[in-house]
Image 1 (tube, rainbow, N blue to C red):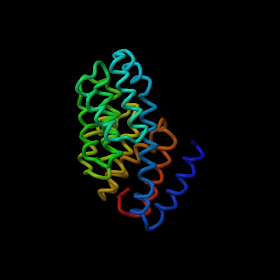
Image 2 (image 1 turned 30 degrees about the vertical axis):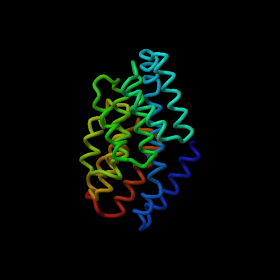
Image 3 (image 1 turned 60 degrees about the vertical axis):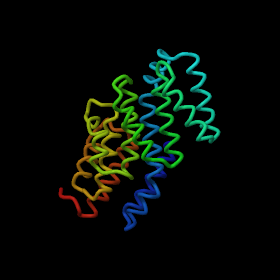
Image 4 (image 1 turned 135 degrees about the horizontal axis):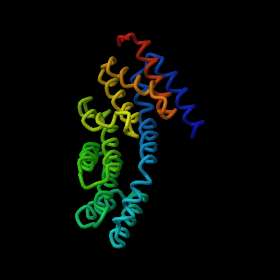
Length: 224
């Protein structure tokens, strides 16, 4: 994974230092998002599993596993129907888990708006554990980078971009990229600088932030 990240960073650095910023963004956006989702998922996996295990029931669990199998077989419509049924009739943790998985299926089907709405809804669900709510907000924010406004991204994750939050730097990266895409280089620089200044920031996030800072500085579009 480290070798892959390093290769990715070298390629991005070359692209961002060229005049093809828009091309670079389109090319590397899916990989950046995938990496962030993996990081965020790993950060909450233990807590989410414990919550799931505590609240699970065998009947809903069997239905959830069956729906996951449909999704893995790329039977998206059938999987979506199965997850939506669990949202209505499942017990314990399964309705929320099903909604999250249904949102991922909707995203895979190309219905980004529906996926964002579902993730946002989970993010506002006071009955779900905070870790799962934060993951849902992060997923919504990363989809909104491409399809929404900076304000919409900020509404999802700005409250997480604080030192006490374990997902602070992922939130800052989403905010920085959204501001960059919107052309607000000053605000983008502020978010990326917060990552660069955080000694606890994961190396891959810190490296990407520094690439963006170098690019912003080279563009001369943001004041010091």
